[in-house]
Length: 72
Image (tube, rainbow, N blue to C red; front, side):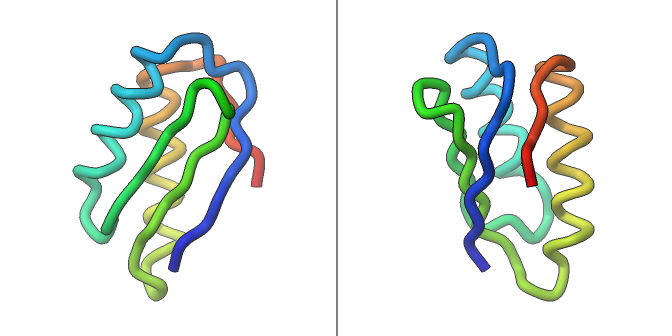
């Protein structure tokens, strides 16, 4: 399943890259893209685990960029 999310308050391209790399390491994630310029994130992950994976994605993003919000 591939879903797109809008990001709010993502401050720099370096943080976007760190978030993207960390998300790609989460078990069940096939691919991820975090765009600083577009303030968007695309997650491609296993359908049956998507909800649990998104909880991990939120936690990872909060560690890298505490002010950044993922709009569902």
